[in-house]
Amino acid sequence: MDERPLDKVTLIVCLDAQGEARGTLYEDAGDGYGYEHGMYRLTTFQVSQRAGRIAVASSFEGNWPEPVGRAVEVVLVPAPRGK
Image 1: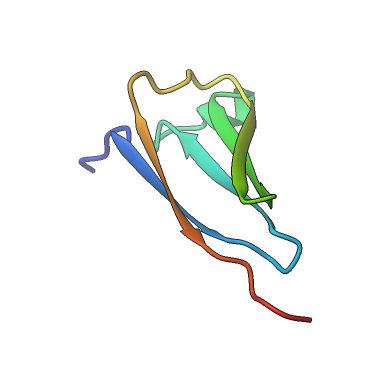
Image 2: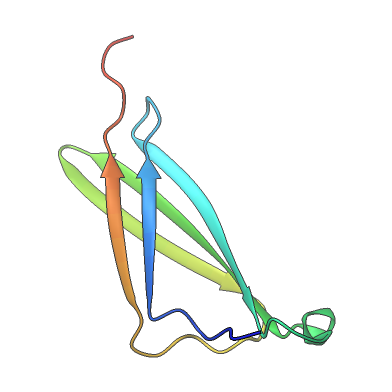
């Protein structure tokens, strides 16, 4: 397979009625069983909208190295109005 690390990640964020969203991104070598020994990266993204401001936070688990120089684009889908 011709797999390689992602140069850019696009997060499509659909806020809920409270103005929050959460999602995960799983990455590993794409072959073998290294993930069984912690060679993976599971990144959790949390997004919140308060008073017209957007905050994006992330945390991760696993021993896969952090991608260097990768761009992250956030596409925001506004929270539903009403109710």
